[in-house]
Length: 337
View 1 (cartoon, rainbow, N blue to C red):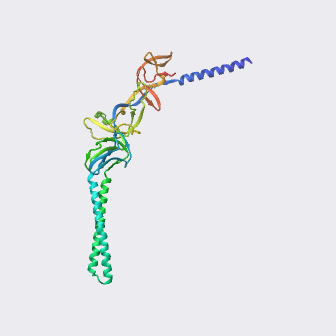
View 2: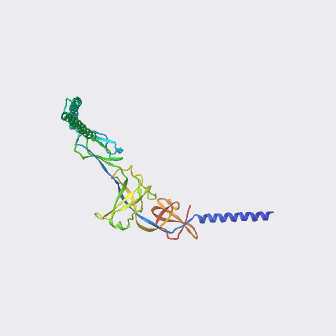
View 3: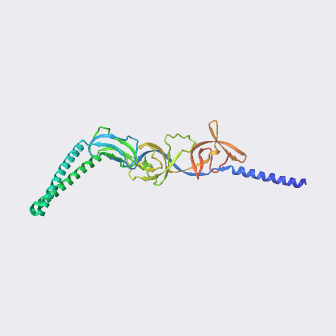
């Protein structure tokens, strides 16, 4: 009985040993040259693709101002009130004119009724009836014209309300309460968006900037350690301008959720300007001792610590990798913890 048990135990131990060997082998990483985009960090400036002025439609003095820089407004929202004192006088004059014409219309109506009665009894002439009818029609039209004139004045008074031309943010307010403005003068500037980043790069990169390329936009005020992946959002180059100005090529980048940035705010953008070949290892292969970075190199004699100098952090097929500047060669096997 002891011999079969010994054989079984030996088989189990051999299987465990094979699994251990497989695990060790699975914990090795072979260093291979990898091609990665060469990124250049530049500052992009947040701009609104559309900036609309809210203008005064009449001349006068600013009696009310409801917004200030940075406020969010809705399309059609009143942002200021311009009052022309002459319009009130014109309205009073229009009311008086309408009242006088209504009195004339009442009199013309009475004269027409009388002419019709006289004509019906044969004591009045047709000419008198025609004259009374014409006077009534003329006065009626005068009343209608006076009311139309009053409507125009009332419309002018209503146009003193300055409305937001679109939903967005107030960039600037150019006037203060009490200011005198002319028709068509800017009261405020509204940025409805969409927002984008305007980049300016040296012209030596002009041939390498490609429309549709992905970029990384850093977070506001973010400070990254050298061995950390940047916490960034992805954007896309949507336009590269064909004209080089002052030795710079201009490009626009679209990024989601730029609406909480200040217009003209600058933020760091990393854009691809070429490709380069690097050696890289998984981040867990790095071990730091007294400020020196090491990896374990697999050799025939066993694992050996090798000092390395680290470069940039990037992702390769969704896996975190750290560039190795010196210390390793293509084909080296690294022992992973």
